[in-house]
Length: 99
Image 1 (cartoon, rainbow, N blue to C red):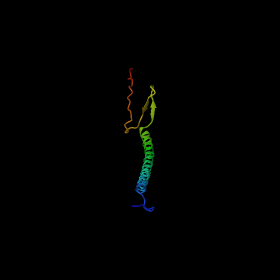
Image 2 (cartoon, helix red, strand yellow; image 1 turned 30 degrees about the horizontal axis):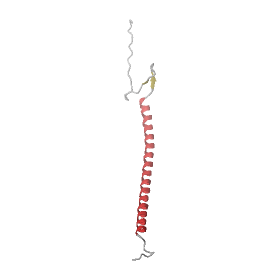
Image 3 (cartoon, helix red, strand yellow; image 1 turned 90 degrees about the vertical axis):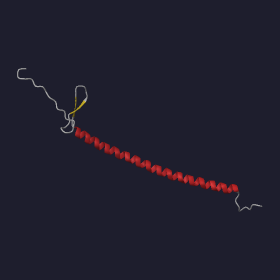
Image 4 (tube, rainbow, N blue to C red; image 1 turned 135 degrees about the horizontal axis):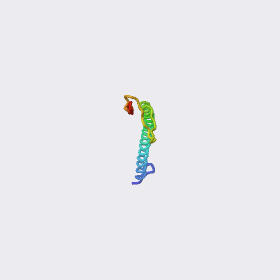
């Protein structure tokens, strides 16, 4: 049983098979990495959209909250608008006619 030059040896066949398996594995890895990259770009794009929406709601909240004043303790006090939950009704005690 002599082996001709055209007939590949077991080692050559196994090497070719393993090379094909490695090539297929790298192609799958590249494809998966590309999918992951696209998903990460989508997530980053969505977070930018959320920042825009959050800024819009923050400005709406500030508008509805109304003007604020600073008291003697350097704390912000909301004057607010009636019906928004920020309106503070204060009662000043008036001195009677004889006081």
